[in-house]
Image (cartoon, rainbow, N blue to C red):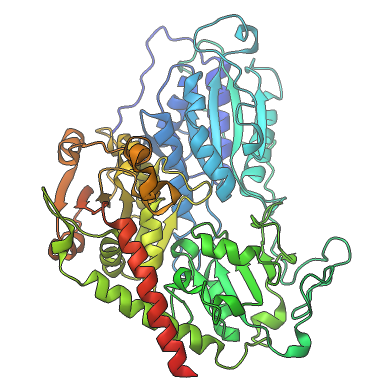
Amino acid sequence: MMAPVTPAPDAPDDAPSVTAARVLVQALAALGVRDVVLAPGSRSAPLAYAVADAARPDGERPAGAPVLRLHVRIDERDAGFLALGLAKGSAHAGERTPGPPRPVAVVTTSGTAVANLHPAVLEAHHSGLPLVLLTADRPHELRGTGANQTTEQAGIFGGAVRLAVDVPAPTGRPGEDRDLRRTASRALAAATGARTGDPGPVHLDLAYRDPLAPGRTPWPRPSEAGLTHVVGRGQPAEASPATGALPVVVGEPAGDGARPSRRARGAVPTVVVAGDGAGPAAARLAAANGWPLLAEPSSGARQGAHAIGAYRLLLADPRLGGRVGRVVVLGRPTLTRPVQALLARPDVEVLVVAPRGTDWPDAARNASQVLLDVPARMRQGRVGAPAGWLDAWRAADAAAQDVLARLLDAPDDARRSRSGPRVSGWALARAVARASAPDDVLVVGSSNPVRDLDLVARWDAAPLVLANRGLAGIDGTIATATGVALALPHRRVRAYLGDLTFLHDVGGLLRGAGEVAADLQLVVANDDGGSVFTTLEHGEPGRADVFERVFGTPHGVDVAALCAAYGVRHTRVVDTDGLLPALAAPGTGTSVVEVRVDRAHRRALGERLAADVAAAVDAALAARD
């Protein structure tokens, strides 16, 4: 419990900086902010004192201070990603359907502290998450003078923020509080996309002059003067008129003839591609029309009888991927090259459903139409598929899953090393998937963990799977998962990440003595380096002379000792028999399950899997003819 700040007997009345910070905090709370993440510093002291007051328990909170939850982190990069995780998790805090994420504020001091937010800002920008960046700055007269910890902060995030305001140092002039509330209103409207439908981070660069600490003056009374509550735009039930003269049609795409009309040939072989954030609408669309569903783990749609787990191994088959004539894309697909190759084919009609933002996912620049919503005929199941289309995909997927199961259930003897047996990445991903119940939350790191999960996860009812796929970096994954766990305290939260991702954000394990502990299990696939590159062209045998140093990057870190330094429980697993018991009872607080994963055989295992699946699928489809 924080002790109230008692001003010294000779403390002066509060300076304009202190009053302005309190007014801003009141406004942010009135506009929907519930969580604030703070990285300590001196120039940001007016905000620090204000949010500390707002976080006091009932009975200790000063009159006029709003109610906020405060999270303190010493590293600004982790503070940014913690805020991102809080926002991401808040969208799923309801009982049933996801809602819009709540805006989360981040407070930093001036200088390099601001720049350290940039990775989280970029992820929030590309993911559409509402972060409110409150960066303290020197007053304008000190900029460009060589003053300590002073740089050009205004506009530092460029086009990655929805709004950037260089707020001058307060002077106490009449109307100043009203103007500050108006600025806060504009910032929150931009962050939540209330007017644009394009949520994302906003930046208020706040200049403060000394004195920076509170004196005797009480908090100002809350006021509505200057506050504007902006009603968010609703998503239209049908797509708005397309640009140019492209009609919203199904079955006969507009264009220059590169994609011939299929209307005369009956139902078009169609698949639904569900990328990150697609939501349950993708699964409903596939079920309504009898289409195969190619859903990434973080799509929110990977479950049920239409989901094809091994889709990336099936797209090369001419009887499956080769027959696809239409793809309906929801969310942002980024995981596999076979999907991107499908979306780039000139003979495939690509319909992209992008309900928010000014951009849409179309890396191949091949979309026929971009829609705000799924057309009514598709939603109602009035489009359909050729006879046997879905059954063929299901038969092929079952054959692929049988091959995968035989491969993963083989003895571990072939993957022994001097330090003992190693678990394959796919076996670990399967164990994590099986341990994740429908009410659980699984945060997945980039590189191999999310791709391994994409191959092996089979759920009738999927857990909530979240991932930082905006830029798909390894930055801040522990902090993001911690934010998700703090936002969803009544759900079991597990993160599945690689060793380099873990080491990159190991500072995310650090929690101050007064901070709330998140219940979070971190499952670390430790293959002593970057095995994702093994599966790419860089891992070809002819490049072995440079691979280990510049791609494999073995580190030899003692993860147990590292966890001990942070006071985090650690368990090491070296074989498949130890996996499920370690995953089954994560306990309270943050814990790490380190799993020794094989890297040496990954490329050969992948090549063997592809060949065996191709043969099994060929036999399964031939049996149907």
